[in-house]
Image (cartoon, rainbow, N blue to C red; front, side, top):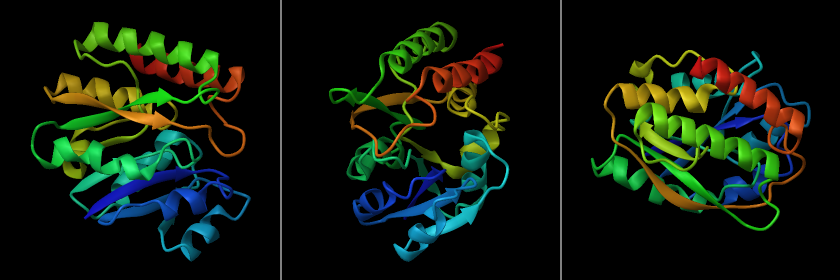
Length: 213
């Protein structure tokens, strides 16, 4: 069994499509981070395990999901329809086989899926990450897989948008084997709260700059 941690904040429009595309053996763990559109109830009706995390923040939701997970293998994935759960086996495979400790999905965007400001910010962060860690990474991909206990041992502290970056930095410092696998990146459902606006991207960059500091 693999549990897939899905941080959710007002994703009612995307949830049915995302949850319907889960492969066999992969179980959704929805972490509701204060939705006001009924996302939690929709997820429950569709068969997902749902927990709540009242403290706002992407990292807070991810940490709550990691703490609540029961499986040895866990994944993280955005729940806005931009990532296809059918790709999860490709991400989990190297971890399950013992060939990698952490796998990131390197996003291959369809037209108009990735705003210029978000793509530019990601490119800059990936370059800095390569410089600091020596890892040959091109993307801070939000679809990722690792073993739960080992992730807990990393002691990730950020509870905002710096969480994904801190995970990779701590994994590199611990000597983990970190690899990428390409995944399609689709146009999300609804308006993004992070990459869809320059302000949201700036907020994410601020949090990640704090982690780098």
